[in-house]
Image (cartoon, rainbow, N blue to C red; front, side, top):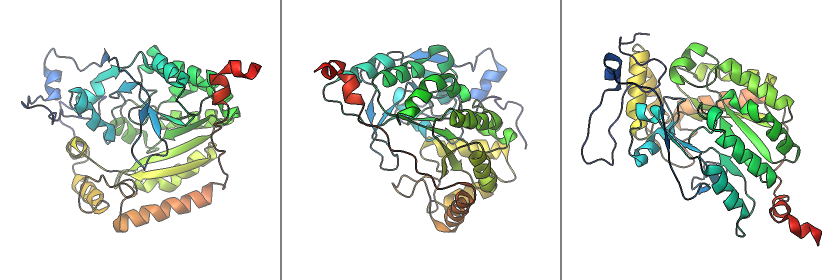
Length: 352
């Protein structure tokens, strides 16, 4: 791998793409910060939303509602589709996404009010459908933990997606919820190669830590699903069997995958990154991505954007199906328990 001397270590994106909502484009090279007194340290910016539970319109996501206590994500995953949402907040999808983290401190109280609403009916809520609810700042704010405590108090079902082993901090709550079929955890793991993860997902937990988290959660009786998302041609596609075998051994109950797709500004950010990190393979990697999405890096089609199409997509689909058949037993995960919420929402009703 060849890198420029001004490569930003510890960050995924190496550029700041222009915000498409700005009439004037102020081109900024974040690498210039390495040659000046400017800092690339993460900033945590309080924001004050009026609501926290949002309707999920996508039919590709198996949940109707989601909560994102943070916007922007310090994990810095280079392929992250959520980067594009940072433009709505006035920032770039590039290094801004990793260094300008918007924090919703009122999220727990907003969630409490939502669950107390007479019109709310129990439905699984996804934490988080956009940016990771266990990214590094969560260790200090404990916003996610406070929301889990509220969800437990209401006996309300929740699904969690994370790449961070910090989730183990909350095993005490999650294990209680699991006993009542109120929680499912999705651990995202894209590769077992630590050197690759350090460049591709620079501030996530290591592969070894995530494997231990899968094992520890499973031992505590918490159902774990592993998401190999995304699979990237020429970078992670050779690991399907090894990864599925390893997570099954650690106690995961199931696994799934998604093919990488590079929508919006992510296409430019990823292209820049892969060219700098893998100059000899970059063109081939990008061509293979295009081959799985009708000749384009972008793919927004529901039903096809996650699985792809064409010969390459068929090969990946067949490999993953075979790996699951070989390493996973067919065991059904119980449905969410939706029956407890009403009586804990209105505890006085149980007195009559």
